[in-house]
Image 1 (cartoon, rainbow, N blue to C red):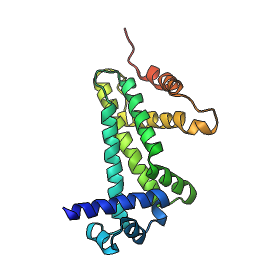
Image 2: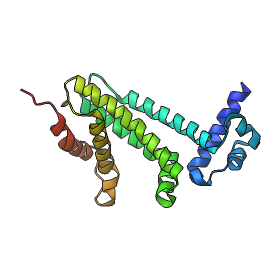
Image 3: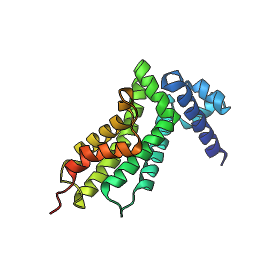
Image 4: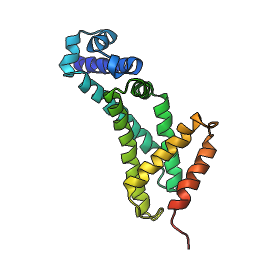
Length: 194
């Protein structure tokens, strides 16, 4: 029982360190200090900083999957579900300190591990979207297009409408984002009603 508690203690300390200082500035000594354990304790569970970082990313990605699954309502149309899921995931991303720090570190220093971490988290969203797009195609809700391409376009458009556009324009509210998203994608993807 104590082994699991120590491992969790190390993971929590490492998450705090990566979130505060980024990947590059986090050291095993620092994690040991925050966890209040000897450095050797960390090596009992993790061979190096990379493995520790990967474990934390794995936990964050599992949380993202839970959030996405929680938002899906199979009795609702595809685009309603899509908007709810993307909104919840982007809210999670904007509030999660690790995302914020990795994004900052990537912009300022171009740390490859920070970019890899962000890419892994983005891939979770894209894989999820791809499954949902494939499901919507199967259900006849959208045109039969390549789910991978559609997913990337949807995700990038949503990021542009929710974050990137804010640099050039007054931020859009949720209803405006939904309206533009529908205009750009839903009307172009929806099956024609006869």
